[in-house]
Image (cartoon, rainbow, N blue to C red; front, side, top):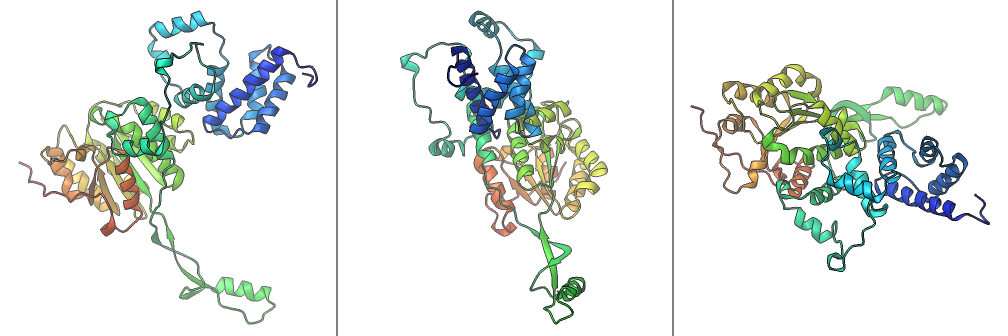
Amino acid sequence: MSPAHPRPQELRLAEQIVRFARALRATGMRVGPGAAVDAVVAAEAAGSARRQDFYWALHSTLVKRHEDDPVFAEAFRLFWRRRDPNEAILAELLPRSPEAATERPAQRRVQEALAEGGPPRLPRPKPEAEREVDMRGSASDIEILRHKDFAQMTASELGTVREAISRMTLLWSEVRARRLVPNARGRRIDLRRTLRASLRAGGEMIALKRLARGHRLPPLVALVDISGSMSDYSRVLLHFLHALAESRGRVSTFLFGTRLTNVTRALKTRDPDAALAACGQAASDWAGGTWISSSLHRFNRDWSRRVLAQGAIVLLITDGLEREAGDELSREMDRLHRSCRKLIWLNPLLRYARFEPKAAGIRAMLPHVDELRPVHNLASLEDLCAALAVRPANAPGATALPAAEPLP
């Protein structure tokens, strides 16, 4: 493409590539103006006759990280697809098959970005009566959503909450470790570092190097109920746990319904949509029944010694509605409580002001938890983060544990 006499088709293609780069930046990819210019030059060299050559020309200039590959692939598929308006209308009207209805990794995030900065699917002008100012994501809107139940939110409101969770400031309290670290005010003398410093100084007198006990973040283990009664909260809480894993590390996540599934490795994916898609593929019992006792038994037997070392904190996220509550559930809860540093039960049923532990499963679990907290809105998640960053006596939002009645 000659800069002096560009053809109209080349100008339109360059404009579309710039818009495509802006859409990628809206999804969270690191795409700057220089990368967009390089993409235009690469597309000119590769040509747009073959779709595969055009794809890799844009990929080589716009993708800087391996974790952005699924985002770029989904954005390229949606942005550069070839459809006339009649086919687009038929695709919207005809029912979709179950395979087509399944969501690809990063599909929702890319669709939201293209809706904001990309080309519309159908060139339909919006009527004057429907034009309004979009104030979603503003400070007042977030303040309203802080106290709204996750189960009562629309899809757009849940997207706003997920963005607020990703921007949430997560502070953590550290615990004293056994390992000694260099400290100028330590009580123990570090003989090795002292001798090395004296050798560098030629044997002259130098200050003694000292050691003291260091501090570290305790491991965090989350047991998330994905049964049918928790389906309105599980996905939002997995977004929250993904943000925890990104900010603090050392987070182990297990899903349980009718069986236990370890999704720690899936949540380590930086893209949140791809991480949740991997969790959905790993857990085949999503939105099914609840067997808390058998799931806790398997965790205590197979995973407790691996992930509960070094004073781990356990977040048990469930409503406690067990099908077969009895002595087995009480024993497994007691073993879990004795194996960790602190056991925090996050129950969405606490959103009701008149909540009472009448269910047999809830009464069997209550004596073995340190804190009972609600987990139904954004404010409850903020209170949980604040509680994990201060001493237990000053933790906000905790509910006094009611006295559990003896099981019949």
